[in-house]
Length: 224
Image (cartoon, rainbow, N blue to C red):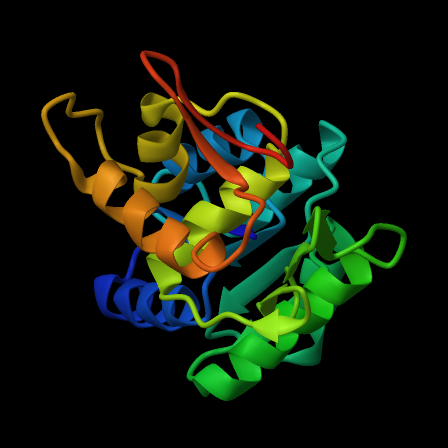
């Protein structure tokens, strides 16, 4: 699942990024309101974590404008303001939940998961390709009912493949959506992680799911 974090305080942003990535979430970050709103409008996200006090454009304005543009992505507002009136104003502006600083990461993560569950009540959180299963809420991965343990980056790569099952995925797409770095045609990092993933997903199984398309990229599918 992909989360947008809009937070200008570097220490808080780093703390949240690290915790979410350890929980296998893909995180995009913005450090001012204008950049954050731009990312929210051009990319699909499962959740937006939005600070109230931001440079260039405040979180309340961003929230109102996103809702006016029919953006329904759940928003978790972070703020140092803790009065009932502040919370009511935030909720009326279109936020889905409100968390006051300082906060524990356990509470933050519980609220994140609650919002993601609510968002997916009418959707499936279980991705399946042949006998391979990935649960986006629990982050459990199984093949033929056998649990598979993945690192954060391996999980993010597999989730991206499964969200685009039966579609060609290029190296550039992987860099942009999994690594969030500029494309470097000379880097072999993707090949390295594809090998790691194959060893965990395909090794020992007669049917291979991850296929290389020379000169094009990769595809996750059942069969040749």
